[in-house]
Length: 493
Ligand code: NAD
Image (cartoon, rainbow, N blue to C red; front, top):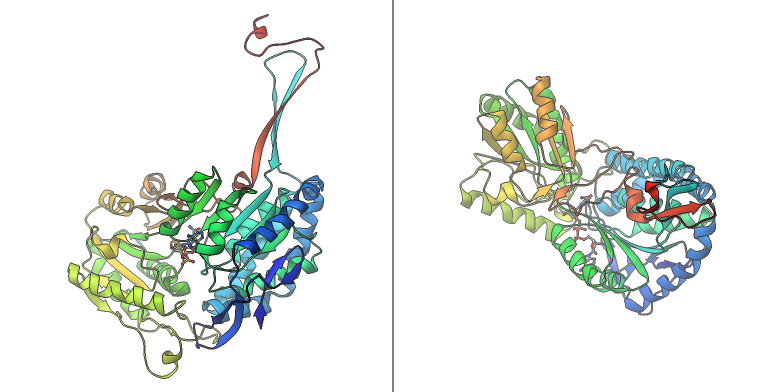
């Protein structure tokens, strides 16, 4: 199958006939070939998006929302098929694939509801016989750049608010996972979304991504990916005075206090650390444990880690799928040497799995380091694989300090039975998302999603907050006094 760009409501080849293979990370099987587009393809897509946008902005928001209801309905009808495509191209186990598609469905219906809200403000004026209000206005053509680890959910977090707010968009999916984007293009078409509202251009970040950021008619870049890439996007976007919304990496921690329900904590850690093979932005990669709970927690973690099944995510019994590609495998593995050299104790895993079906895919053993100190690289840098670092602390205050002592600020969690500690933790943990007695993952689409410090630049995906990225505030004053009234001057009378 050849995956071509989706421009102005139709599938079409890019200007150069270059295609690259899409590979199943579980089996090495070639699933499809995807277009490697170039800057002129971006130009064509922007032309279509720009032409469509003026008309689209005039469609009443509740009517724009009707398309989202239809998109959500189609996604729901095809949930199993979409989850299968997702698992095959990305590798996460099928149960998680279904969960991710569900997240997209939820987002469709939630954002469709915004079509009848899109609330602004009406406020009193300081002057007599004058009316004041603010409304959310569409911005124009927006650019969406997404990573491979959530090939559909993140795209829906961005494209659905963009649609309901009256924008048109160019979406560049990650090269590793274009098949979900292709499926979404078919759904956009079938839902009857007017031509040019949704456009998808496949290709590399350096070529297509750069062309999008540099294009003067793309007014917003909504990016999710690594912090290194996000920095480049922001630097280049800054030159063009783009509105740039960044959701980037994480180094998320679970804190386990001495009064915690340890079995619950173990379940939360395993789900957060090894789900999606540790390749979630919210993955738990640090466990900060009170010294009095450390031995027990480590033992219980190891007991359950040893029972985890690793393999092709299409097998319903498998708990951990492959990592995305060989490069990721090597990156993860390089951190094992780094950790050992820094003096951490490798207690479990630390190896690329080989033999039998492992040889065909990219499988990494669930890994646990103990004796980790907060300053070690394995406790500071995003590894993006199934690797946990156990860090021992002597107090609640130290736990908070260690949690906050990284450049990232996406998600954090604490297991404790003490309600006072729980409330102090939600106040003092400096991440954009905090969980009490649950792992670091499990965001729901109606709340803002994003992080502080090196994880983000103050914007949020998801929830009503997502509308802030895709709308401009417009303040409107209507003076019905029939005379000149000067603000700040004539209000004395
Ligand atoms: P990545 O930064 O390599 O790529 C992300 C996207 O940016 C891809 O589409 C890529 O092609 C594109 N890109 C690459 N170079 C570019 C450039 N110079 N200009 C414009 N675009 C460019 O990230 P990835 O490996 O695909 O995803 C994993 C990363 O994403 C992890 O760091 C993870 O934590 C992060 N992530 C963050 C969130 C969040 O909401 N905070 C969610 C999921 C993933």
